[in-house]
Each structure stands twice: as C-alpha cells, then as structure tokens.
Amino acid sequence: MSRRKLAISLAACLIILSLFFVLNLAVNKTKNVKAKSNLTSQANEPQKGVYQKPTPIKIARIGEHELNIEMTAQITNIEINKGEKYQAWTFNGQAPGPAIVVNQGDTIHFTLKNIDPSMPHSMDMHAVHATPSKDFVDVMPNKSGSFTYTADNPGVFMYHCGTNPVLMHIANGMHGMIIVKPTTGYPTDSQVDREYVVIQNEWYKQNNFNDMKNNKPKYVVFSTKALKDGDLNTNGTVGALINHPLLAKAGDRVRFYVLNVGPNETSSFHVVGTQFDDVYLDGNPFNHLKGMQTVLLGASGSAVVEFTVNDKGSYPFVNHQFNDATKGASGVLKVTKDGNDDGSMVMTH
Image 1 (cartoon, helix red, strand yellow):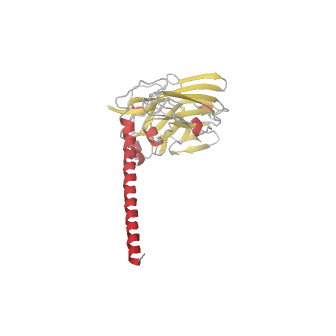
Image 2 (cartoon, helix red, strand yellow):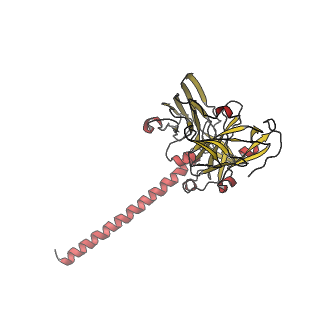
Image 3 (cartoon, rainbow, N blue to C red):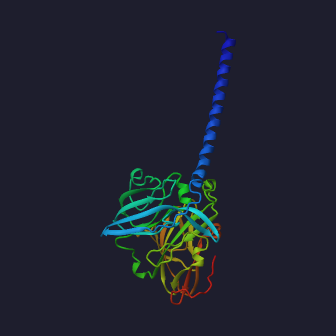
C-alpha cells in the first residue's frame, strides 16, 4: 500500500472514531437527561392526587429488653406554611415521623409497611448495628418487611428512608428521631423538670431535585414530637413552635433532645437568654460538655442540651445561621409562673 493510501485510510479511521465518540456522548447525555426527568416523573405521576390518612405507629414491649415496632410509609399532605400544602413522603403521616424511645440494650423487632402505591421505601436506623444490604433493604409498594437488631449504644439518633435517591426521600419528609435511653441515665437526670424534642428539617419546592442537590431550601423549620401521650406533637412547619410554644415554669431546668435531620443544612442551635449548663453530644452521656452558648449540628447530628430559665418571659430558640432562622428555624420556650400557657404574646426572632 502506498503512503498516500495509508494516510487516507488512517484519516478515514480517525473520522469514524470521532463520529462514534460524538454520537456516544450524545446518547449518554440524552440518557442522563431522561434519568433526571424520570426522578421527577417517578415522584409526581403515580402519586398524583394520593392522600393517605396518617396511620398510628405501633410500639409494644414484649419483654424487659425486647419490643415490637411497626411503622408505615405513606403519602400524606403536610401544611408546611400557612395555606401551603406539600405532598410529603412520610412515616406514619408525619414529617418528621413519630419519636421512638427505647432502652439501651433493647432488641427491636421492626416492621415497615409500605402503602405508597408506586414507590419502594426503607428504614435506615442510625441507632443500631446492622447489615444495610440485609436489614435496610427496600420494601416494595403494598408489601411489608421485618428486621431485627439491637440498640447497643445510648444517644439521640436519626432514622430515615434509605432508598435511592436518599436525598429525595429525606427531603420529601421521610426522617425522624429515635432516643436510646442510657442504662445508667444521664448524671443530671434528677435535676431536669421538663423535656422536649426539637427537630430541624428542610423543605424544598415540591420534588425539585435540582434545588435539593444544590442546597436551595425554601424553608428550614423546627418541630417537636411527643415523648408521651398528651405531649405537643407537630410537623415541621413554619411557625409551628411559635404558634404553639413549648412551656416551662420560672426556675425550671429544661432538657431538649435536639436533632438536625438535614438533609443538607447545618444547625447552630442556640437558646436566647440562657446558656447550656450541660450538653451531651449525640445524646451520649460520655460526650459531656458544659457552659456552651451554641451547639453545632451537621446533618444527622444531635445533642441533649440542658439549661435553666430563671424568670417569666419568652426564650426564643433558633438556628443561629440566621438565613435559616429567617426561613423558619425558630421557636419559643414560654416561661410562666406556673408552667401553663397564660395566653400572653411571645417574643420571637
């Protein structure tokens, strides 16, 4: 073969390879666009118009160190701001989901019922040692899955749906708190007069995965969950703990179980007008700090904080990253003479 023919052949091969490369890039780009589009259509179309009445959590102790827990994955409308409904993916029709309290060393027999008609969900429980590929697997629509694990370490932990994409499942409302009470308690237990749960979470535009990925929350909010029957229990809603302030009596020592479920933002948790006498990072009594002004909590981070309120009045608590406080991460502890709501106005931040 002459040099000229060889050069022509090589040039032709290069052109063909270049065309193949360009075509392959175009095909992959189209697939990626379709995949991203499918995330939104997967979330929107099959669930359009679906509303499932909240299902109560079932917790039954069956032995001194053993209990059954049954939770339900379901689609429920949550009012995230006054007059603004969000079709949330939830545990038991709440966002955050109900608070769970167990004892250190408990064996948990956990069942997840998935009544979402179109999408798998799962349970990733930070409070336990488990094999994720076996114990945190997807539960398909209209199916149930049961798993057993032990809560070996004390603390305040996050639970959430771990189904891919995890970001979308958490951002759409599938998160909550589980408290594992230490066997020997906290060294300050005898001093505490009142205790509350405070959870920070984020809301984005409905199923807007780009905003979720790029950390552009529409709201960052606080909620409280009932620790026992009769306690205040709210969803993560703008103004939830301003319209329904937590209550204490002048002179009380108050304990907050605080959790930031994210999925993206940090919480610089601060109570205005007081300091934290005692702090247990992640809720573990071995992680004991004293005299703090603010506790920094990354996504899934938690703490038990304790403080004293000496006089009557309003004690706002905020995420001290004030862009988030302005988006809703603010609440009030209302302190009265007898610890009951006296109907007076509250001060907010």
